[in-house]
Length: 135
Image 1 (cartoon, rainbow, N blue to C red):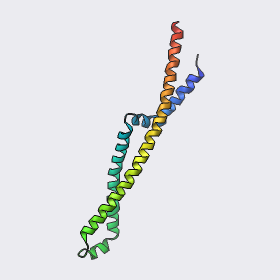
Image 2: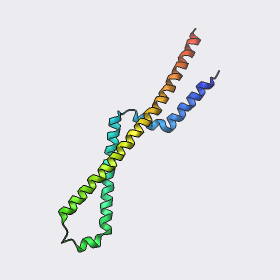
Image 3: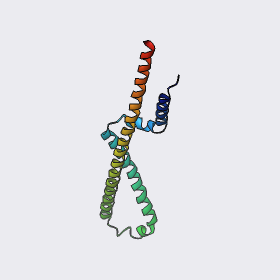
Image 4: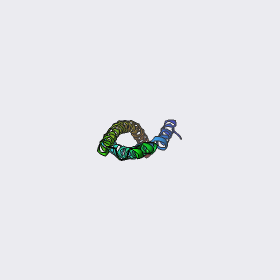
Protein backbone atom coordinates (compact mmCIF):
# COMPACT_ATOMS: atom_id res chain seq x y z
CA UNK A 1 0.00 0.00 0.00
CA UNK A 2 1.28 3.47 -0.89
CA UNK A 3 1.87 6.03 1.78
CA UNK A 4 0.81 9.47 0.54
CA UNK A 5 3.34 11.36 2.67
CA UNK A 6 6.17 9.19 1.43
CA UNK A 7 5.18 9.80 -2.20
CA UNK A 8 4.97 13.57 -1.63
CA UNK A 9 8.36 13.62 0.07
CA UNK A 10 9.98 11.59 -2.70
CA UNK A 11 8.42 13.84 -5.34
CA UNK A 12 9.75 16.99 -3.64
CA UNK A 13 13.19 15.44 -3.39
CA UNK A 14 13.19 14.40 -7.06
CA UNK A 15 12.14 17.89 -8.16
CA UNK A 16 14.84 19.43 -5.98
CA UNK A 17 17.51 17.10 -7.36
CA UNK A 18 16.46 17.81 -10.93
CA UNK A 19 16.27 21.60 -10.68
CA UNK A 20 18.50 23.07 -8.01
CA UNK A 21 20.08 19.99 -6.59
CA UNK A 22 22.74 19.41 -9.21
CA UNK A 23 24.35 22.79 -8.69
CA UNK A 24 23.87 22.77 -4.94
CA UNK A 25 25.28 19.28 -4.55
CA UNK A 26 28.35 20.48 -6.49
CA UNK A 27 28.71 23.41 -4.10
CA UNK A 28 28.49 21.12 -1.10
CA UNK A 29 31.86 19.59 -2.02
CA UNK A 30 33.60 22.87 -1.13
CA UNK A 31 34.16 24.79 2.06
CA UNK A 32 32.69 28.27 1.93
CA UNK A 33 36.08 29.97 1.73
CA UNK A 34 37.21 27.71 -1.10
CA UNK A 35 33.99 28.25 -3.05
CA UNK A 36 34.16 32.04 -2.67
CA UNK A 37 37.86 32.05 -3.61
CA UNK A 38 37.16 30.00 -6.72
CA UNK A 39 34.39 32.41 -7.72
CA UNK A 40 36.66 35.41 -7.16
CA UNK A 41 39.40 33.77 -9.21
CA UNK A 42 36.97 33.18 -12.08
CA UNK A 43 35.90 36.80 -11.76
CA UNK A 44 39.51 38.00 -11.95
CA UNK A 45 40.05 36.07 -15.17
CA UNK A 46 36.78 37.25 -16.73
CA UNK A 47 37.37 40.84 -15.60
CA UNK A 48 40.85 40.86 -17.09
CA UNK A 49 39.49 39.80 -20.47
CA UNK A 50 36.63 42.31 -20.19
CA UNK A 51 39.03 45.13 -19.32
CA UNK A 52 41.26 44.22 -22.28
CA UNK A 53 38.26 44.28 -24.62
CA UNK A 54 37.15 47.66 -23.26
CA UNK A 55 40.66 49.15 -23.70
CA UNK A 56 40.95 47.77 -27.23
CA UNK A 57 37.48 49.07 -28.12
CA UNK A 58 38.33 52.50 -26.69
CA UNK A 59 41.63 52.57 -28.60
CA UNK A 60 39.92 51.62 -31.86
CA UNK A 61 37.25 54.28 -31.40
CA UNK A 62 39.91 56.95 -30.82
CA UNK A 63 42.45 55.67 -33.32
CA UNK A 64 42.57 58.92 -35.29
CA UNK A 65 43.44 60.95 -32.19
CA UNK A 66 45.99 58.34 -31.06
CA UNK A 67 47.74 58.30 -34.44
CA UNK A 68 47.88 62.09 -34.64
CA UNK A 69 49.39 62.40 -31.14
CA UNK A 70 51.61 59.29 -31.15
CA UNK A 71 54.83 61.33 -30.79
CA UNK A 72 53.61 63.68 -28.06
CA UNK A 73 51.94 61.16 -25.73
CA UNK A 74 53.28 60.53 -22.23
CA UNK A 75 53.31 56.72 -22.26
CA UNK A 76 54.26 56.34 -18.60
CA UNK A 77 51.25 58.44 -17.56
CA UNK A 78 48.98 56.39 -19.84
CA UNK A 79 50.37 53.15 -18.38
CA UNK A 80 49.87 54.40 -14.81
CA UNK A 81 46.28 55.45 -15.57
CA UNK A 82 45.52 52.12 -17.24
CA UNK A 83 47.05 50.26 -14.30
CA UNK A 84 45.00 52.28 -11.80
CA UNK A 85 41.79 51.75 -13.78
CA UNK A 86 42.57 48.03 -14.08
CA UNK A 87 43.13 47.65 -10.34
CA UNK A 88 39.94 49.61 -9.56
CA UNK A 89 38.04 47.49 -12.09
CA UNK A 90 39.35 44.27 -10.50
CA UNK A 91 38.63 45.38 -6.94
CA UNK A 92 35.02 46.30 -7.76
CA UNK A 93 34.31 43.05 -9.57
CA UNK A 94 36.12 40.89 -7.00
CA UNK A 95 34.11 42.41 -4.16
CA UNK A 96 30.88 41.86 -6.07
CA UNK A 97 31.91 38.27 -6.94
CA UNK A 98 32.81 37.55 -3.32
CA UNK A 99 29.46 38.80 -2.05
CA UNK A 100 27.47 36.95 -4.72
CA UNK A 101 29.34 33.66 -4.23
CA UNK A 102 29.01 33.83 -0.44
CA UNK A 103 25.26 34.44 -0.81
CA UNK A 104 24.91 31.55 -3.27
CA UNK A 105 26.81 29.23 -0.96
CA UNK A 106 24.68 30.15 2.06
CA UNK A 107 21.50 29.75 0.03
CA UNK A 108 22.62 26.35 -1.24
CA UNK A 109 23.45 25.23 2.30
CA UNK A 110 19.93 26.07 3.45
CA UNK A 111 18.44 24.11 0.54
CA UNK A 112 20.79 21.24 1.18
CA UNK A 113 19.76 21.10 4.86
CA UNK A 114 16.12 20.75 3.80
CA UNK A 115 17.05 18.05 1.33
CA UNK A 116 19.07 16.09 3.88
CA UNK A 117 16.30 16.46 6.44
CA UNK A 118 13.81 14.96 4.00
CA UNK A 119 16.29 12.22 3.18
CA UNK A 120 16.64 11.37 6.88
CA UNK A 121 12.85 11.32 7.32
CA UNK A 122 12.55 8.99 4.38
CA UNK A 123 15.26 6.73 5.79
CA UNK A 124 13.54 6.62 9.18
CA UNK A 125 10.26 5.78 7.43
CA UNK A 126 11.86 2.86 5.60
CA UNK A 127 13.61 1.66 8.77
CA UNK A 128 10.30 1.68 10.67
CA UNK A 129 8.60 -0.12 7.82
CA UNK A 130 11.30 -2.82 7.76
CA UNK A 131 11.02 -3.27 11.53
CA UNK A 132 7.27 -3.82 11.22
CA UNK A 133 7.78 -6.44 8.50
CA UNK A 134 10.38 -8.39 10.47
CA UNK A 135 8.31 -8.37 13.68
